[in-house]
Length: 310
Image (tube, rainbow, N blue to C red; front, side, top):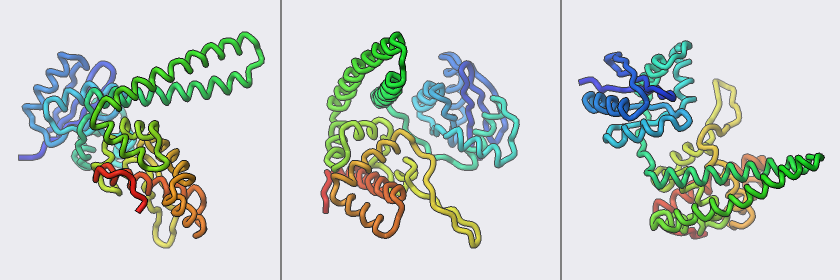
């Protein structure tokens, strides 16, 4: 029996579905009735893999329904699907065509199914993300306040800044309550902050946006975050290795931790200075520190052991 692969294109109001190798296509509404119909058909098909493209949150309810039916699910990166479509010559773009491309992508690439985060993990991720948004708004409003000359504008900015400053401690309390109230998260946070250079906020960013930490190999975790360099060469030409992709919020947190670690962590400070002494550019050395820091944290959670300089 041939393996069945299903691609689902998610839009605001409907779901377009394409099944391979049969080529069957159909659409259902993106509501409770439509999801029930979809799950009923998928369970009958018993597919090898179902691929859903991440579409800014619209896919969440669909993915939760599929995972709840104990079907193998992969939420795939839209950029990867788009590049795949270009590679196979699919220039036209409609929802049914996108579903067919996603199905072909699942069949050809076979992305690794991932467990969906539970409700508590999703809430923590949203709270940590909201905290980052509030800080971003605070920084922007303070810059505008410095440049504003009109009294009316400055008063408006001051009121908004005060409201944001009042909101931030409330979000911090909610995050602290969630993390310290969970034995699993509390244990992981205590392990992470034992590493000199990793503060509570960075540890909580990793708990929220990198639940795979401690469960993957060092190469896999570096690639997932986007700090694994990839080689560029062709024939006699050799380009500089680069990093790209990954999870931007986690990568930003890792770089913040790396910048702190080269000052307060003796092992990573020595590692950083050694790279500089060998003539490595500062940014290249910092990326290497970030990668080493990430893989060390991964090993600490895997082995459930706090930081040990040796």
